[in-house]
Length: 102
Image 1 (cartoon, rainbow, N blue to C red):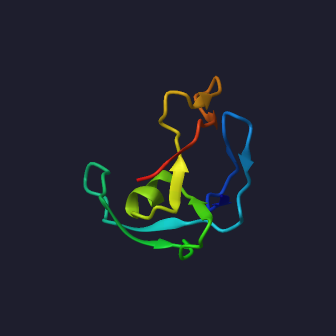
Image 2: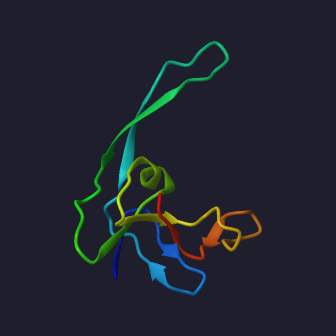
């Protein structure tokens, strides 16, 4: 299986495999309302940008937000919420045990 990383940073798995960023980033468009008097706005998510059409034998690694916005078997996101995800002393993700599919 070939993986193409469509996030802006390297993805490191707990087993040491690294998936370098491809330089292309898949994103979900968003539209924000004006802020209310309490400083709160709402957001509406729209189209996914920069996600290629399916390619046989290729899995696309995207952000959790992109993965949750599309239902494609060739799209996965890093399993950052998994209990085996490794974090540093600041709580930042260092590696993940694998991927999730929405």
